[in-house]
Image (cartoon, rainbow, N blue to C red; front, side):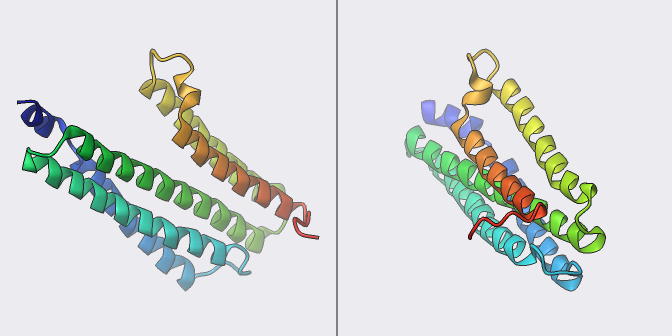
Length: 183
């Protein structure tokens, strides 16, 4: 009976659909940026690399969610095993999404750098873009961890993703002010 109840409660179709949409979006963006690259190639190679890696994570998310759905339909597989696939898919999707956010940040910075140079708007774009992303993540965490003490800031995976995006922003700021990271 417990597996039947779990079978009814598992819903990975939305995540499969969302991951599939992200695959299409990433491939479309890659095609578009190479058809109309920024005036300088500043950031296009790094963004392409990040978007290509995110593609792998989104494909894995579809695959892992599909496997979880398949296992749930078998009804003789443990809930723990199904949850492992769901968790793996969740981490895969999150990391893929972080790479897309980071790629967009670098790409937007590169385009503005090429078109308007080292002006404040060029620096404000990545800052505002990432801060907006972080505010949304924080609000999501507040809603998701409601009732758990400090739950909104204790999410290891989301903090890791924010940390990766913060590294990207730091590199962009160093680049903007032409501070060499390597002597």
